[in-house]
Image 1 (tube, rainbow, N blue to C red):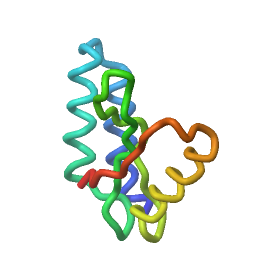
Image 2: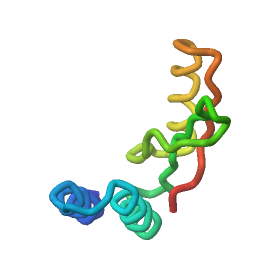
Image 3: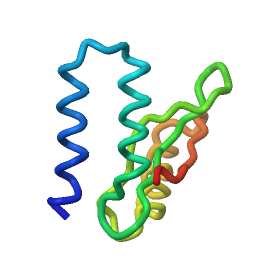
Length: 93
């Protein structure tokens, strides 16, 4: 598993030191995540609907036996704190 996380961490470190625009860094990260699965199950983006009624990616869920179930668990916990927000889990790779 550490061998799978290493490329993701390398990409994050590289992106953090670049002078590129934020949007381009995010697109690059999304491309890396799309091709590199961490662990045995597909990774998931946790998305939240914002005030403009658009979905925003707020977290990448990985490292669970079943990442989808882990994402759903996070949504349940977030719902206890703020029931007015809408969340969803979207496959990342």
